[in-house]
Image (tube, rainbow, N blue to C red; front, side, top):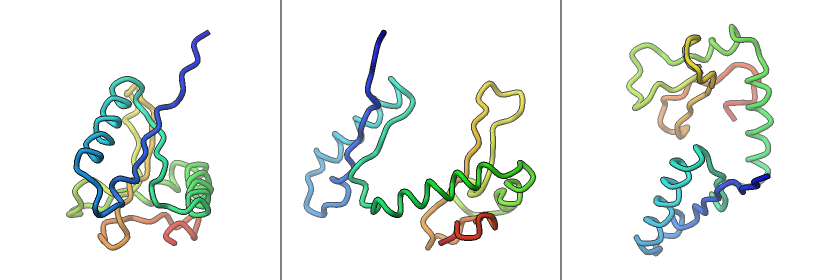
Length: 123
């Protein structure tokens, strides 16, 4: 049996003003390799306090447990100027990939389509 660990990316070089560009390039290369080899990775030292991370996961689970019709109420807005369609979406029915997602940007961007349920999500 083969046991591999989840690739871990340490993001802290992006939060240190005087960090060398080479450190940031190493992080970027680690992400590239993890995506190519595994398709996913774990981010640590990202600057988000643990209690907020746990709360975000809790609210995300509550959102994705809702019916498809409820989630569609958070679909991307027509004519939005966001760089990617912010809001809820899922892969087409005929796609082998059945992922669904809620794409969010920085709150200051004004692009987000927040779910109404759970009501705490926009916090």
